[in-house]
Image (cartoon, rainbow, N blue to C red; front, side, top):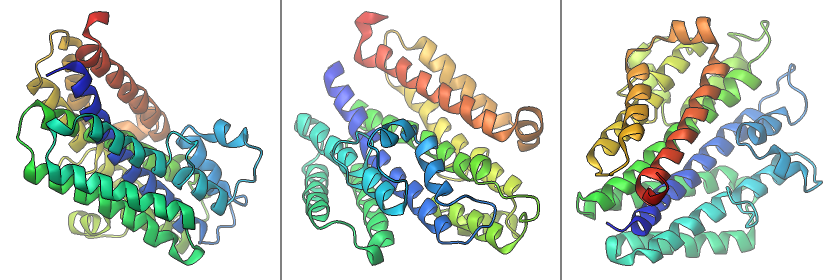
Length: 316
């Protein structure tokens, strides 16, 4: 496969997953912002959202107030923000258009129709009473695209590069979603175990479609430690860091790359740490925020290794 084709397929998968995960992060932040919380400054949830997403400086440079409406527009429909839902869906469509011969017609139709719809939504804006509906629409379009890909595409390297981009992006965003709540929005000792704390953690679990999963696995009240364990170490939780890295490790082993040994070593090492890790060691020895920050750095490094192994092999 040509490196340029692989590059487009990889970023098509990443861009579609990024749109979905941005919707998930916005949704959990929006739900948290609706709950009164005496220990939080006004709009601290949205400050946290921008900080964890790495977009705080970009947003601040625009000299606009940090509030729900502005942040949702900036991260949802702003065509000048390269990480917004709008530009992510545009990127997914443009990358798909560049490799029409490597994907199925059903995949192209789904992505193109999503792009047409998001342009119409952007012209009208998101109504105040339809914010959650918009986030659900983004997630549904991502689910549709992923389902069509899984159900129609030949299991060759094209399929593997799309899935590789999907799982790497998902791991990145699961870590960011957990860090928003656990580090920046962690309540005071008086609030731990209270109603607001329960609903915050419930909102976080729902943002990664894991509320029912948590109930099935633990059959007990929601606690921060168990939420962290579920989202980091459970291999059977689809959006956990462990599940994502298990698939990333498998895919980089299946894709033939002349200079991919270091990529395979790094992905295998990270997968092994998640496979044999314990939540007590993560929280007590290192601290969850520090662990998630280090994990994000390693995911970023894996992205660089993927680029130099598959897309720009001459730079090895």
